[in-house]
Image 1 (cartoon, rainbow, N blue to C red):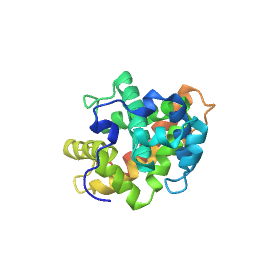
Image 2: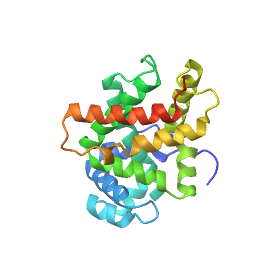
Image 3: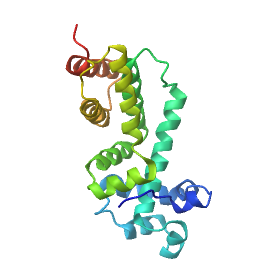
Length: 210
């Protein structure tokens, strides 16, 4: 899959169909949280949503377009939460930003555990699927983390000779597996302590040495 892909509903200047149909959104999120793109069943999604194929193809070109629309919808949920919590580049540096992102990721997971399951599956998808994502949206997560790492290197928080690509991979992996380290029943103080311990691992592993 190559080139730039534009979603049907975006090209028409419309609204994401998953925002218009809660039943379709719920069915789609559940299916893609439980299965890879290849194994997910469009028939099961439509059955659970109570939608026929004619109605589906009026809104989407194919299963991939539904998948990408879900990715967009979940991304908007994350962006909304980040904006509400005030995460920005005007923080106290990389480790402050990472701490905020980790905590917000945990809040999102508590809001709906399927978000985390879906995010993990994206990282494990076949190259062709990841290429389709990049063709449609670019590498949004990677771009954000790359910017954070480059600023950390420039400010002296990270070693100047640190591989940005490797650092981004490690940090993205940690962020996507935060919930596995922290039980859902923990209180906020325990969660913050766990996040800080993880930050120590990152700081000692990739941070600039005195």
